[in-house]
Length: 205
Image (tube, rainbow, N blue to C red; front, side, top):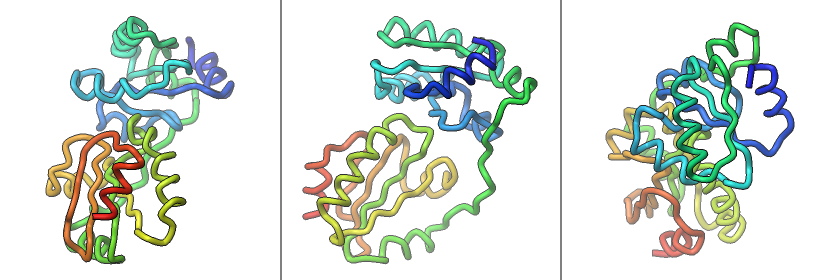
């Protein structure tokens, strides 16, 4: 699809937008609501794309169209309906289509993080990002958790697309990654998709 058709497809609703560039490229500007799965990082690409919804079309793009074409071919063999942006972000920008960009945010240090996990007797920390497919899949689970255990714990979300130094210190290698702190001390952590019941159990340790 050319940029205009791609944009109209996005506006039609019920689609998933997938950016297959690197995280550095993504930060330089991306299509609103796009998720990220780096095609050049095979492990990351496979891990993140397995959480896409096969009942909804996937609109995929890269910088020029080469990587997205390769990614689209693989996704189709896995049962997804895929549409590609011809010319990629380069052509999208040349045609004046809207581009989102991250605003500069200061890196969170260990001291600030320690203050966050001491804000309540019981804290659930969520290292995630809006562009992460499994993180989005966890959103309704977290919302339900907050309803079911209302007032019993504090949920702290750490944007892994920003606070990369803290991620390294915490040994967070993949997203999402959850931690439970009780009275400021870590008592549980787990990487990846976690069920509602498992989170409840972790918070009741």
